[in-house]
Length: 205
Image 1 (cartoon, one colour):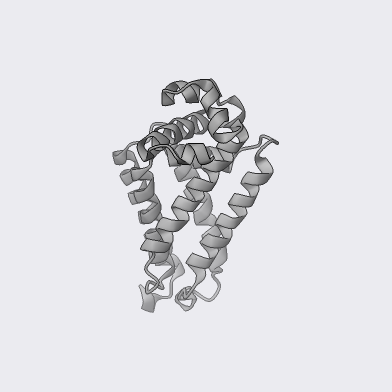
Image 2: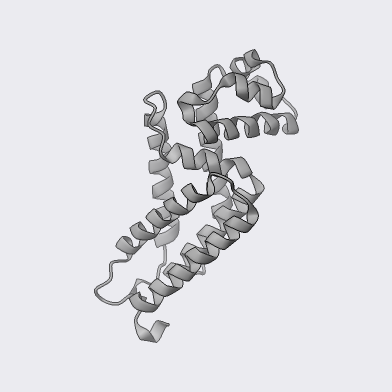
C-alpha cells in the first residue's frame, strides 16, 4: 500500500475509480484485475504491486467508501435537528452529495451490500455491521420520539425506510445520473411526508 499511497493524488483516484466501477458493475468474483488495470491505464501486474491482491484492493475500497460516507455525515450532520423524518432527510441529502462527488461509490456500495463471495463476505459483513451501528447512533441521538402516535414503533419505521432506501440504491446503481437521483429523492421525501402525516400526533404536524 505504501507504493500506491506515494502516487500522485490524481493517479490514485484514477485507479480507485476504475476499480470502483469494475467491482460495482460485476461484483467481487467477476471483476477482472486486467479490466481494472486497462481502465486505469496501468499494467496488470501493478495492481498486485500496489495492493498485494485483488482481495486487498476490494477491501481497501470498501473501507474507503464507508469511511468517506461516515466522515461526510459526521461533518455535515446538524445535531440540533431532532425530528425523526428531518434527520432521515438530512442523512439522505448528505449521502447523495457524496455520491454526486464520487460517482463510483454508489455502484460499489450497492454491490457490496449484496456480496456473497466467501472470500470477502465476512469482512464486508463487519463493515456493514459497523455502518448500521453508526447509522443508529446518528439517527437515534436526541430524536423526538414523543411526536409519534402512541402505538407507533419508530424503530420499525426506520427498518421500513431502510428497506426503501435499499430499493432506492439498487434502482440507481445502473444508469445513475443527477436528474434520476433528484427525482427519486423527491419521491422518497414525499413518501416520508406522507408517513409523517399518519404517524405523528396532530399537534406536531
